[in-house]
Image (cartoon, rainbow, N blue to C red; front, side, top):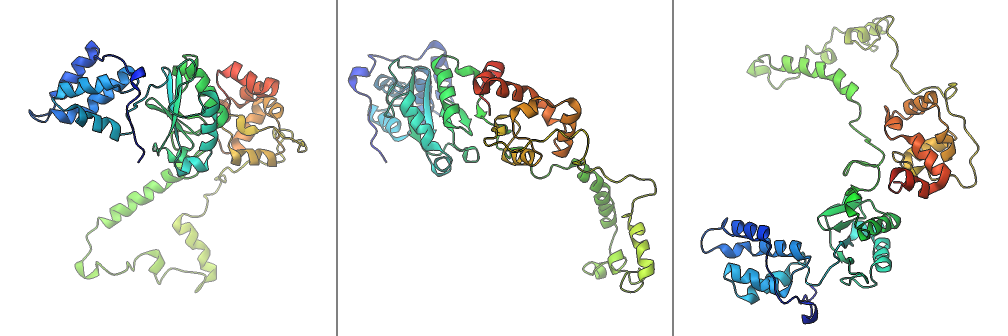
Length: 370
């Protein structure tokens, strides 16, 4: 473990005092512990001191020690042991903690670290010239599925690229960090699969199976004699010797499906599938250009969906921007998206990207694509 020491005396403030609100909070926190056990409040009080000033100063350590009746060295031991305590001054607007553990490193954490070195300071735990930003590399922050990620104060920003992190740093440096939405910075909900659900996404099928499960429960609730409890049910169709099967009666076997309800009633339509590729509402396809547009910049389009669009001959933002309602409905049905194209407004996104690329997208939507 690295050696952690307090900041130089030249940057240490002369004194420390909790604000009126924090002092009341500290008193209430200390009172939560039994008499003689008030020292257990040392970590909460140090954290509140850090949240107030941005870092843990020598003066704050001494004030907390006096409040809890502890020797200064005991509180110093706590502050220097736990890496959650910042012992050096940090940026007044943002302290960026870049996760460098294996999942994040494999997904591009080094690029994020290089951004911090370029935009903030070449070395960690150093502030930029204006004192508003600082950074450090930390261990796992618990968002491995959404790697790579950073923590800024108490919020995490996940699924990052170097460009996205530059944008986030710029917003915080401008004092507009509250405008950046925490969490995944791509089209996913928390840690759900990129591009949407890949399983358990057919509620209609589950609804159809529900009655059969209820029927089975009713059948199982019937009392069974103990002598037969462990035996196979011979009255089931699968073990019924009287049932005609292809093995013993080919002609009569066809009636079995009707008995089990597997055949479609007369006049009942077949379940709907994908629309025909020859449908008149299918969007016009083009030959693959030498450099197709990156359709993944459209929120709602992941690598899998982009490949399907390429198979349909869709390679450019201009194509998507030109889709009429009937064409959007055809693509929506082909991708089995159930309205996502309209919800995410693919056409508006594509128009912005086709008109002026990322700059126009930011002007229209106030954020970078993806």
